[in-house]
Length: 231
Ligand SMILES: *[C@@H]1O[C@H](CO)[C@@H](O)[C@H](O)[C@H]1NC(C)=O
Ligand SMILES: *[C@@H]1O[C@H](CO)[C@@H](O)[C@H](O)[C@H]1NC(C)=O
Image (tube, rainbow, N blue to C red; front, side):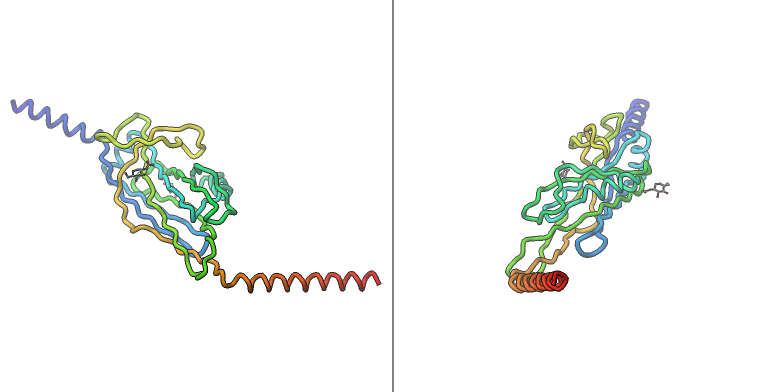
């Protein structure tokens, strides 16, 4: 009898150690001011999680949905990928020129560079889009959604119980897709909001008049230079 209980206990403990009960914290901060900023993420798994992730050769990634008011610059990401400072894949079309109300949404997958799982720090450069001018001017608000924390282990499901599965690129090349587990985590920071200065419609007449006058002055100058050289 005792022997059976002992066996059951042993089985239970070993089962417990083999499967992953996600216990992660994510700190998200924004650096810099103005239109060009960096999102910094710090992912911290508990030491128990770290051992399991490491022994199962798992990979960790973040999926950050980029709202309409922001964009990631594909050229800049490609440069960072080339020097291996960032491993990221952009899902969706990005037009870096369009203002917010003419833009499409996209997502970015950011992959951890190191296989050390205790403290994963990742950084994503983002840019704010111009927003439609308003009568009042002032500031527009952009809210950054929380990222999804994705875990993929080649040995298959190691998460205890069932977890939400999502299909996502296996790595930054985006060549193949893998099934990832969408893992819950504790967000340490509050939701992030960014303020972007919005053009003031009241300034439009002044701006156009000034532009017109400057253009006229330029024409007159060129004409006068031409006429003196010709004469
Ligand atoms: C990766 O790990 C190495 C050594 O452990 C460290 O020097 C480097 O800064 C880490 N890189 C990143 C991006 O965390
Ligand atoms: C992952 O799960 C969270 C919480 O349930 C959800 O908000 C998020 O959209 C999911 N992410 C993906 C990529 O499905």
